[in-house]
Amino acid sequence: MGAIFSYSSFASSAAPPSAGLGALPESCVALVLTYLEPKDICRLAELNRAFRDASFADFVWESKLPLNYGALFRRLFDLSADGFSKREVYRRLCATSGFDGGTKSVWLDMETSRICLQVSAKSLAITGVDDRRYWNCIPTEESRFSSVVYLQQTWWFEVHGEVDFPFPPGTYSVFFRLQLGRASKNWLGCRVCNTDHVHGWDIKPVRFQLWTSEGQHSATQCFLESPGKWVNYHVGDFTVRGQDSGTTRVRFSTMQIDCTHTKGGLCLDSVLICPCEYKERHRLDETIMFHE
Image (cartoon, rainbow, N blue to C red; front, side, top):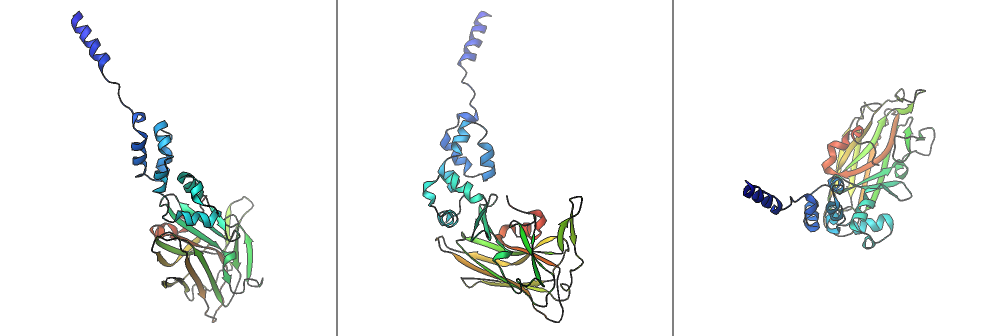
């Protein structure tokens, strides 16, 4: 029996220690992280030291960055991306950044690693917007830009805008963010929307168009709907090709200029440009609200 005991003790002491995730080489962990989404990389960085150190590897985050991230970084921060780690470049691009006097915002969507851009109503050319008989600027918490423009009544509804930006290669969708009615809060702090002055949008459809500097064009039309809700109306899609740091100019418009009837009671917030993969996600604005 003593011999058996001695043998078991020897076998037990000679058994190799069990290997855990912390024993994995950092280079192997970093290679695995390149196949994961950014949010999963951040979660795994809290697992142990090996994953945390691997999550700082430049090649991990460079695989998540747009091909022209250097041009994007220069445009938004007036700095060269070379002086920052790729993780820090990614972090800064994901944070919402304003440009052109704060009338436009851009950010990197963490789920697609694609650029999203929003243009405020203040940056749009709106027919008659300076005439208080037709249009008013309204402060609101429901806009990324803290205000929207409200159309009381007009015969001629026409809005134009454009953006010149170094979009990374890919296909993008353009939306006008509109709402029938004027939202406010009641004495209980609950959201209410006054739709008493909404009229004329069910008589003739509204026309939407876009053009790009590469000659792409799209046009569509529809009746405005869903009073009291913000809706993203799809204008069209455009594609950016190539990998250089050049810019793409996108022009867009919406109009309803049939002067046989008036129309009014409309809020205009902004124009949204986002990855085409999220077309359905962005169509109903309540599913996305605002990027923080």
